[in-house]
Length: 357
Image: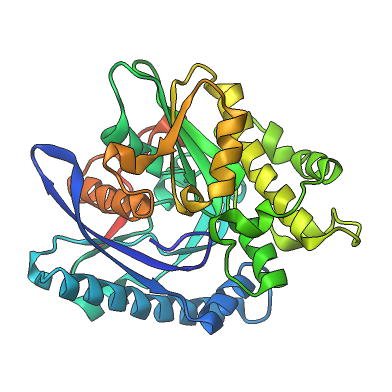
């Protein structure tokens, strides 16, 4: 998995057997993006010269990095490549336009299969969009398989670059959707003003004072009032959008504090609007390590248990990579990987395309 935060590649080795529908996480590996690659990926998110050629080269470069991540994972876990059924590879999202009928994740699956000698399952989102869905979020289907409780109403919140939630009532429909920006804006602002790729534990933002007027302007984004199912990306929330709402005399640290409150607002607004009776809220993704953000969520959601998913036995740092292993397995078994109540697709779909070794 390489997500909207553009920090690097998460690789998870997952074992499935008949008694473990969600699979067991065996080993993990992480490779950071080299800064030049990260800069080129940021640039390709927006229209520019010679896009098709640049995108193709980036897909090849990413496939090489994904191959390195797989090699590290197998070496560290002492696992032979021929023991692996498939690599589930999400690719790097650079355009997400379900409104226009497409989504683009950069990867060359054929090259990745060639480099690793392992079958690859990729392009998970396109079939859902072809069936009228948003193509996202897809992880709620895994949440339902791994974290549903028959007697407790749970909400699972993934805070990556974008935040999304899954509503898991004990009975009835399971729903989910994107909530708004997660770490994306905070990371970009932090890097611009401190040189650090992210705000460790939210400490820098916690030293500022959030700006109510700015928060009100940012929270007026039409996305927050758009009914679910819905999904978002850098097209909706990006540094240029943020800058357009600034007067220019704000303290950088106060802006960071406000962006943290914006992330919390999107999550809390979604829970209060769509699943107010939830008893437990579990957080995963990089945002789970933001102490200041977690405290803000606890304050805003009194009366609900709020914890990280590791208390349920699923690592918050590796849940998405684990989920795409599960999605790849669904593809290999010919089983649907989407939840229509989440994405809005007309029917359940087998997601992904298989590239044999």
